[in-house]
Length: 254
Image (cartoon, rainbow, N blue to C red):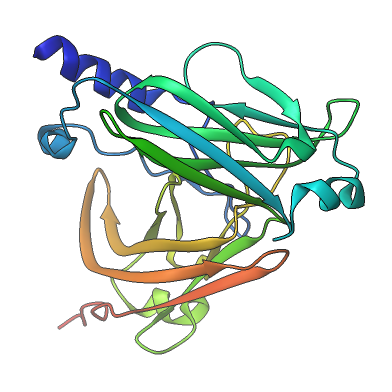
């Protein structure tokens, strides 16, 4: 039983180089706010027994690959669905099945390629393989977007308001991406890239956002408030989330 659980966690950690991440723009270059939690709550990962099957289908800009591949200049689709080499398939094929995969949560890596092998779009699709079942994963290759997370402090611009409060740092985490931190007064962090990918941009869709406003004094830090929201990354555009933080004022000298 322990060996099965170890395999489950190992597969979750690998997939494609499909661990999502982000980059930040803003007045302050953000530092990494830490990797994903691992630990006692890992018990919520289902314990799977026996293999399952995966069907991967794709469209391009919402249209059938039989016609749309030529429109965007795509020759191949490359799918990484398990250990080993990626499968490179004709773009117009439109689907591929992978049989007898270990039951597990995994990331399906997908790249739309030109004839010379250079990528047009590249995404990672989370999916779950279930024992003795066939799971469908659908990929729509379309222009990526970005997600901008802005914040206010006590209803005002953080550029001026942060200096009047005990808050001095903000940490932003986006579902499936790394966490980043910036100065409270920086106003925003923009998520733009999947780590390891040669192209910038996030896959269009909905992302859960968690933000914390923090007081850091020396080696000590104190979370003043945690807010949650949902951001929508549009195809070819910029999605935006605004977090309305509140923070106590600086103490007044007697």
